[in-house]
Length: 505
Image 1 (cartoon, rainbow, N blue to C red):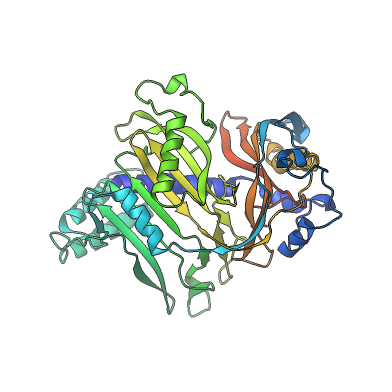
Image 2: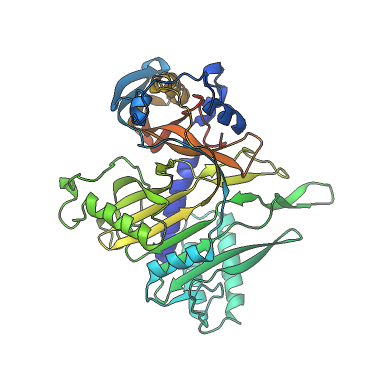
């Protein structure tokens, strides 16, 4: 199980670091009426059909890129923070060949049929067993040995040393009644109802947590909990001071995680700087032990989508060639393949650096807090096929409220980006500890993206949005570099408002 824990740590670190890194709060400080966000999704619908919205006149049947007068490529350079910030845009402008609809959506959960399809495709004939939380005597002995080894660390603080000794004492107590072996229950992928108690409330959800006998293959499915409001369990002392507090917010972020820990690379965050596409050769520096071409990786991903029964509404969006360390400690390559939902042939955006939206912001003790994940599917592909899939926050499409939205011409979107991109990143560039900062836009895409009303949590619209994708980095005076890749700016293609992806609108 050690490798599985490493994989989880890597994946969650990537998500967590990405979710907080971009300073998108700057969007909400803008006072220019031309770029203020429309907080009501009904206003977006009205604007999308307004007769007086400025558009580019074009004959019927003209490709959307021509209708919007979008160039094939945009190249320019901007500056900010008194010259410390450089924004370089050298990017293809990707416009889908379809009308851009507006679709009302809500969060969904994974059905048993979807889970069964994924389970069978990944596990095949390999017997899978339900995970057990009960430790055997040998597992407890191994755990005690690890904690005793930790106590040999002379730099360990006293509080940590006390905790280690407490854990050892608890393990020794559990050892007395622990079984020699665990009775393992084989599973066919059927979801189970799991309950947990928060405060005095019993909360349930459906999940599956299965592993192969050698713990190489792992399948985790977690559907949303059934609470529809935040639950707090707060303990007070005799003076009314809070002594402890735990809570369960309202989350709409069901997920399926598949891992083949024997084949996964186990370190590093995805920098997403080496985008590849069909027809690209395998870079010279990766040739040798690694021979999987971009075409072969994309074919593998598309075959996988068909195999799990989602190829009619999920498609490959972005592909990156990444480098990590394999189980033997050697450098190893793999493809990070991002897939998104398609609606009548129109792709949805993949927000690489955001896991979901939290319209309530950062809650205090006793406050309500909600979270709605952005639908995403990540595949890791090696020469051995798909070795990881994480599919989170599936959507339920309710109705198409406008099959062909009226969009602003690209020239207006460019004006907004020219103004906002430097604003988003110059605050940190002005720190004395930062010697220089760079924002590099290497791809500009038009796709559908989920937005919500300001006062809504789990109802929203898929609307056309321009995303400026690339990498930002800050060079510190001590030589350190802080960098992240993904969506640098999201602009509503209907009204030109800047979308705060962290809030969801």
